[in-house]
Length: 83
Image 1 (cartoon, rainbow, N blue to C red):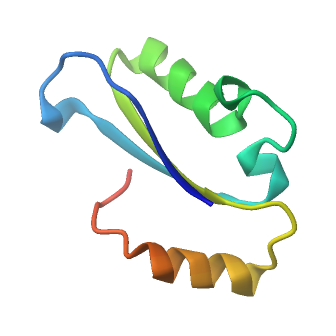
Image 2 (cartoon, rainbow, N blue to C red):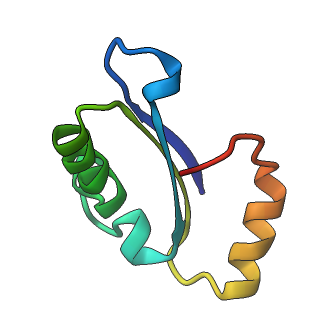
């Protein structure tokens, strides 16, 4: 599953932090509301502490092995650079 969730305020693109979260059920937040997923909570905390917008991209699925995760990253053809 690939989801791109943006937590951006009206600030210049150069101040934006780009966060790529990779993983399995802990990352995707199995049975947890989307806002309560760890990557989204971390992005929210970073925005508050750094006063900068955070874009979150999550590549994660329950039960994935490392090989499956690597395949998903390759298939996503990520073009952005991440912090």
